[in-house]
Length: 153
Image (cartoon, rainbow, N blue to C red; front, side, top):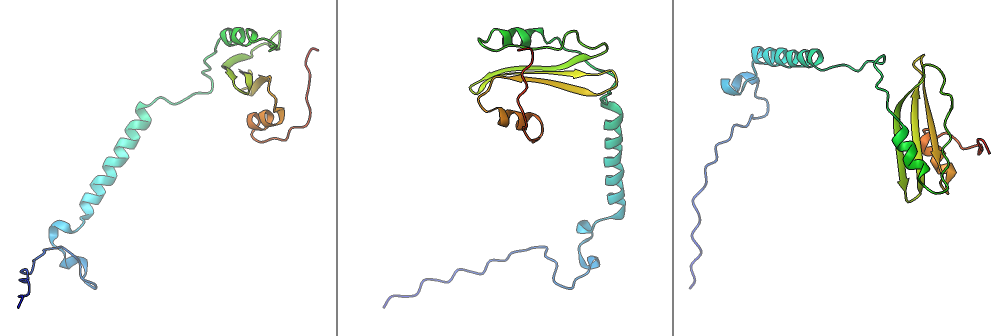
């Protein structure tokens, strides 16, 4: 007659589990949070945050880094059928501070951003795309397309 397989000996597992209803005092001292350690951590984190605020430069609106849009304009004019219209002469005090030209599968797109002397911003967006309504919605934060304007012919 076959005998039953031997039963393995019981395994002892030692875990630090808080039984229900046990208060913090019943935990070993090494596992109890100390008020002093919490205060030390809070002060350390605050010191690091203040140090970063002092050490890192803050952006200033009065420090505009002008860009030269001529290379993007040259790229745009090199595309057959893409006419570039620029405000000329540029109003006094206006500075170009961003420029981008992309010749994507959808078509060429030119962006030149200008900063006005009063701190205002104007963006010139030019594109030769099949889906003008989508372009306007994407470039104007979802504003509704109303009309096509032809500039200078």
